[in-house]
Length: 177
Ligand code: QAP
Ligand code: CO
Image (cartoon, rainbow, N blue to C red; front, side, top):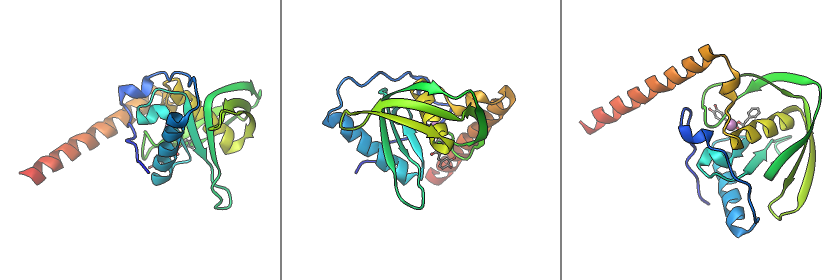
């Protein structure tokens, strides 16, 4: 088990564009297991490789229903169909801790991807699952959910993190004398 470091907004590396995985081998499976550990440890429901500074098109999702864990891995995911209908709901992100806001997404999608055994799988998703897939694919394209919010809100989020960082640095300095 290995926990990976999750990048926090506004880290520039969150805007990197991930490259497709060419072979799904034990190296890729190792990344997947570490990502699952990291996501479960932080009580997340979705994590993209970009968030742990790995520039490859790998996503893990675990949307708990009735306390049953349901881990899904998407490698090189592509959305091949989107509903006309859109839906707005609250989102959060492990890279933007403590911030939740409303985002508009396609209410239903069809996504094709490879699983960890390199099998091609097609998912028809709606509700939270559809929202999560769209959120995580955005990460692989260097996009964060806060970029859908107004500039005013984005500035406010950045300044909150800046203040938090200064406070932490100040406390550390005090501890060390
Ligand atoms: C993305 O997000 C998502 O702020 C996954 O303090 C979220 O797992 C897609 C988390 C909602 C669709 C709907 C966030 C954990 C986890 C926090 C997450 C926090 C602790 C976020
Ligand atoms: Co996220």
